[in-house]
Image (cartoon, rainbow, N blue to C red; front, top):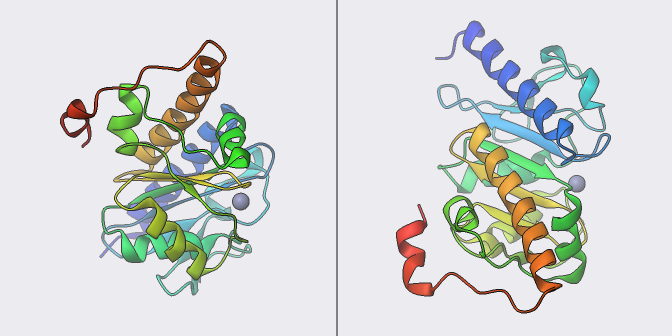
Length: 210
Ligand SMILES: [Zn+2]
């Protein structure tokens, strides 16, 4: 069982992670949402709906069970909680999730164009190309399941016309993956201005992934 002190530490980890992604422009204003799973109790700690990251404290963090029931917290949970819960339900390797709105990733999202794994970091963090989930209104558990079908065993996916989601074995890894996707999108976009970028040869992919 998780002690309340451990849970306080995990809430602080979520608040610090949210502050970090906000500070580097990955979740403008109140966009996006973050969560992490307490591996001991199975509880999901979630950021509140539409709440300014610079005001977020551990008191604002929600604790949900896997069914979506609010176990602790006063605020309204993020409207994308069910998508996060679908991931925790189906991906036991996920202990942290970021849904972000980085501008270059969104550029590929509006083009419905996957981000090629041009940089070794993309292969390492994402596990290959960043796929695009066809547009659907987000927020439901079914959206989460459909998204997971598109993701396969990758750690990130673009939502067409609506941001991206990354997961990791820790929240820090999910944040790292989010940053890597955005760097890859910038790199790919810039490379395309100069010609056709070279891909990392297929035969090295398995070596780099995982
Ligand atoms: Zn969103």
